[in-house]
Image (cartoon, rainbow, N blue to C red; front, side, top):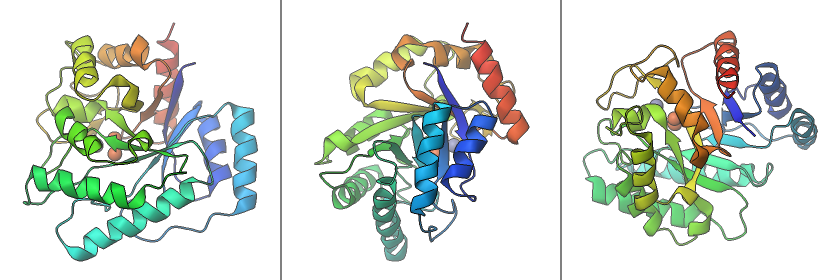
Length: 274
Ligand code: FE
Ligand code: FE
Ligand code: ZN
C-alpha cells in the first residue's frame, strides 16, 4: 500500500488531525507533539483518542510519524536547554503510548561547538535515559542536512549514535530527501547507490519513514521546496516513492504548502504510482 501524507496541525486534537488528513487524501501524517518552538504540551483526552482510533481505522490511517519540537536539542551545551530536551523527550514518549506502535521522529541536534563526537555521546546518553523497555514507539533519528553544527548529516554519525544505545530495538531512522540531498547524497543521479550506502552503514531495516521534500538550494542550507519547485528533479522524488526497498514506508510531505497545495501534491504522487 502506498502511504502518503503531510504535516497536520495538532491544535484541534487527535480526531481533528485524522479528519484533516483524510480530507487531504492522506493515509498517514505527521504532527508536532507540542508547540514546535516551545514548551508545554496539551493534556491528552481519552475520549478524543478513542474517537481518533476509530476514525483512523475507518480512513485506513495506520502510520503516525510524530515530530519532536525544533527546540529539543539532545546535545545542547547549556544546562537549561539540555534539561528541556530530557523533559520533553521523556514526556513525549509517555504521550506516544496513547497511540501504541507508532513513530517519534527527532533531530539529533546541534553540538554548538562541542564537536561531532561529543554531540554523538550526548545524544546517545539522552536516549539511554528516556527509552524504556516496554515502550511500543519506535524513535526515529532524522537524517540532517549538516547545517551549522548539526549532527546527523552523515549516515555514519547516525550509526555511531545507534551503536551507543542500549535498547536498540526501539531506534530507527527517518530519511529526509531535502536534508540528504543538501548533505551531498545524490538521490537524483544514483538512488540505488545512496540506498545501498544507507544499507551498508545503518541497515535498511532501520529505515521506517521518509520525509519527502524538494530542496531550494544544495549545500547544507535545509530550505524545503515544493515537489515541483526545487533543485531535485520531481521525477527523482517519484522514483523515491516507487523504490521497492521503500514500498511499505510512510512518505510525509514537509513542503511549504497550504492545505490545497498538500492535497495537490498528494494527488500528484498517487497518480504517479501507476
Ligand atoms: Fe524534521
Ligand atoms: Fe524532515
Ligand atoms: Zn528540514
